[in-house]
Structures are given as C-alpha cells and as structure tokens.
Amino acid sequence: MKILVINAGSSSLKYQLIDMENESVLAKGGCERIGIPGGKLTHKACGGSYVLEQEMPNHTDAISLVLKALTDGVGGQGAVISSMDEIDAVGHRVVASGEAFKKTTLVDDEVMKTMDVIAELAPLHNPAAILGVNACRAVMPGKKMALVFDTSFHATMPDYAYLYAIDYDDYKAYHVRRYGAHGTSHKYVSGEAARYLGKDIGELKMITCHLGNGSSISAVKGGKCIDTSMGFTPLAGVPMGTRSGDIDVAAIDYLCHKKGMTMDEGLNYLNKKCGVLGISGISSDFRDLEAAEAAGNDRARLALDMFAYGCKKYVGAYMAVLGGLDVLVFTAGIGENTPEIREKIVGGLEAFGIVLDSARNSMKNDGTIHEISAADSRVKVLVIPTNEELVIARETAALL
Ligand code: AMP
Image 1 (tube, rainbow, N blue to C red):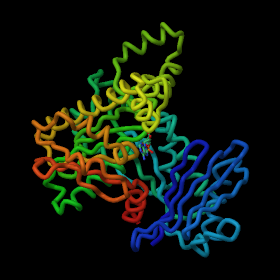
Image 2: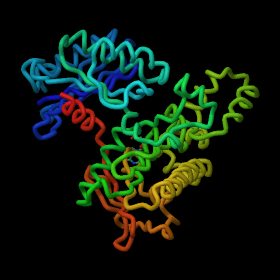
Image 3: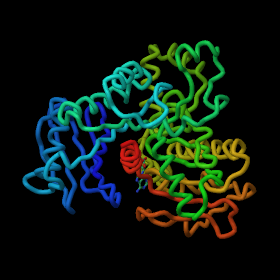
Image 4: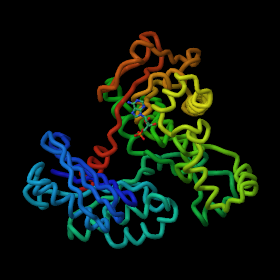
C-alpha cells in the first residue's frame, strides 16, 4: 500500500510518498511560492534531488506538479510510480480539529463542511490544509483521503486539564479550551520510546518534549496524553522561536494600549515577534543564538536560559501530574540537536532521578535513537528523531 502524505501551508506544500510494506519513503519534496511569482518544486527520489522552477498560481497546480514528479519525474528523473492509481490514499496533516473531530477522519463533503466551520479556530493553519485537500480532490477525484489532526493525540486529556477556568457556558458555546498541537510527533516518539526500551507503553509515565521552532511538552501516561503545554492555539506554553508562550493576558491589553496595537496586531506580535527572537533581538534560530551566546552576547544567553527554564518548569509540573516519571524524551530540531539546551533543561533535576551522561548527551544526531541518561539515572532520557509524516501515513492506512 502506498500513501501520499500532504502537509499544506498557505504558500507552500510538503509531500512524502510512503510505501507501507516497509514504511520506506519512496519520494519526498515540496512546493514553494504557491500563488507568488517564483514557484519552485524540489523533488527527492531515487537518491537524487531535482528542482523544477515553474509558476504555481494555486494549490491545485502545485498538487498536479507533485503528481507529475511522482509519475514522470522532473526532467525525466525521480519517477517512482507509473500512474497515480498506485497511490492508495492521501493523508493530510491538519493542525486543529476543535471538538468536531477526535480522531483521524475520512474526507467527504460533510466533513469538509465541518472543516470550513472550524477553520476559524486555527486561522493561520487550517485554511491552508483545506486548500490542500480540495486541490487533491480536484486532481485525484474518488481517491480516499484522511485528515490527520495535530490535536487528536491530546483528545485523551481529562476535562480538568483541558478546560480554562472561564465561564463554563462560554466554553460550551464557543469551545474555548486547550487543544494542544504536535500530537503526531508526541504520539510517534512516545511509541518509539516504549519500543526502544522493550517496555509495555501501558506501563510507562513519559514526558515528551517536542522542541523546534514551535515547542510543546506533553505528559503521557500509559501511551495516552494527559496534559500538554500548547493551548487553544500553538501560542501557549514555553517560549518559542518567535512566539511568547504563556503570558498574563492582562499584559497584552496593556501592551496593545501602550503600543497603539489592535488585538489582531497584538496577537501577530505575540506570534511573530516575541519568543527567543524578541528577547535576544538577534534570531529565532537556536544555532544563531548559541553562536551569539558563545561570542558573549548576554541577550542571546538570556533567551536560551528563558527557554530552558520554561521547559524545566513544565517537566517539573508534569512529573507531579504523572505521579512520577519513567522516560523523558527530546525530539524535533532543538530537542534532537542541541546538547547544551538539554543540559540546561535537565540539569539540577538529579533529586528527581534524572541524571544525564554528558558524553552521551553530546552525541551527534545521526537520525537514530540515543539514550543520554547516566547508567544510574532512574529516569531514562532519550533523544528520538521525530517522524510526523510516518504517523500520518500509518493513521491513513489504518483507517482504510
Ligand atoms: P524544527 O522546527 O523542528 O525544524 O526546529 C527548528 C529549530 O531547531 C531551529 O531553532 C534550529 O536552530 C534548531 N536546529 C535545527 N538543527 C539544528 C542543529 N543541527 N543544531 C542546532 N540547532 C538546530
């Protein structure tokens, strides 16, 4: 069975064609500048990387180019299937499900009507996913398609964890609550951690730290999420590349007033101009910040310290809600690649049974799982490369 995974953004789109027989990636790539002059498709397959520069006025054009690359290659190279009939189904990544969808869902007209209604819950992300689904339905009519939600893994949170302490009637009327994000990643790494340790996931208490440009931390008990740091939107939780993370909302009202910003402008500010970028004034990229800290820049040091401190607080809180901890997992760009940040987060938690082995922690990410805890650490600390596309493909295949 071959599954095409689509992750559509507003002007870009990423894809992978996965053969579920052995879960191998047959081809992957992306389209950039959809609807903007300078369209470009990058297609990686058969050991090569091929670029096609061509305008893509809309997502339907982009999907058509992707299918052409898969069936005919780019410049005749990198074809991996002979026709689109070989694609058994398409799995679409969707950021927000609201309360309308609790699990992976097959696409039909009714489902897409509901998707239109809940689009306002994630205005930065869901409308792009809808464009991607509609484009695929136009180019591949009749093909089975699944929506795989970033929020589904968090649907198991208990009510006292997902509710905000607002008027309950407003929660019921407007569905304002914690939904979380990065669910496919938290699900993947928690499953991989149990598999790597040879333990029954049902027995394990885990904290999974997905630390990338967007970062979220989840408490996972017996394989089920019981709490997560992102909230109604991905703005909540730890400080991130450009997002503030948790902040007193009254401070926003005050800032908007002082800076003459509307609420929309205030939210844009919190999403795009804050986080480690705002604190450092240098970059949202942790590689730049580590270089600046090493060169003596104190605001880069401060940004990194605030990030690690924010993560440490969630680790501590989630140890409390889990009633202990067996496994701590780091994943995503920062989680997989920055020993210094892992050290800052975990340092000082020895009293809670978490001890790093600094030699193991400084290992280079080679795309495999690494155990970085010391031999005498009660809690296993693992670095696990995430694979959100594989989860989307597995969920889509399972639904068929
Ligand atoms: P992601 O959103 O998962 O792609 O993660 C992006 C973040 O990971 C950026 O802040 C990068 O600086 C950081 N990152 C990615 N690769 C590395 C690396 N090799 N070394 C240090 N940081 C990295």
